[in-house]
Image (tube, rainbow, N blue to C red; front, top):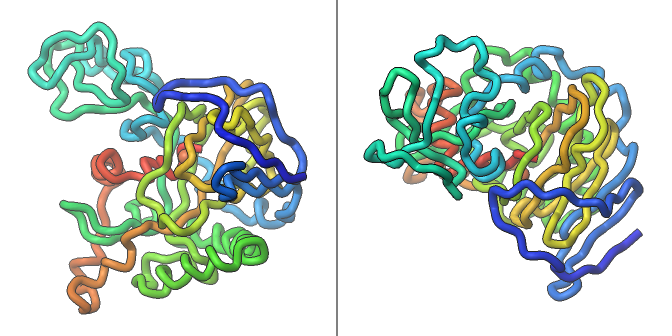
Length: 328
Ligand SMILES: [Fe+2]
């Protein structure tokens, strides 16, 4: 099925929106005015063996908390900042949203905020609502960090490599439908350091999200002329969670075995998830991975250092596929 549609709704980034018009069959959506592809959706195109090959440690890692996902985590609330932190000592809980100077804010329209702890301290940096989301693989250079593999990836290379076969399969499908975009992306990939890339694919990075209902957001940090690939692992039982493009008032029911190839700069979000164990994978290429070679020279060993996930998160908020090449 092919659909040509105009944008029919205005949405605000950071808002949670429910979409009732859900696609659950092979479908391509195009913008009626520009003719540009918004998404291509194929049901049961990835064999079960690729999901079975994925190490359980990857799935467990998807449940690690991040507080830097910006718009995808929704507008900041005290409840959101405390989510998943039931075991923290009482004094470490956020109790009030404040501005940079410590003045109390009743409501914020922002997706990150400073806050006051129960013991009266003011947070040193603004945070987003807590969500279960992590990045795997390579990251490009930020203002303060060199190109690198994420800390977990570097420490768990054998587990990480169990993602390679599904990456290769998705890469084949991507090429078969979008050879031009694939080659654009592969050219950028080929200009980038191999040690930060996923072999036999045009990807550098995978965002993992577990039971993460994203609010309206656009991904950042990904290669602009390429496409993002998206699939879901069913680790338990759930319904809902459809990936939606609210401006077009249309959503897609992505389940295990399905592949969505989409433009991540179009606003997207999820419907509510009922149940648990929805682990989504977002496969993409970091836009600036080719700049890891500073001034036409190969990186030194110091440029291939690793950093902790928490520090990675800090840069995410400024540049991050916020997973946002994610957040899906
Ligand atoms: Fe996203």
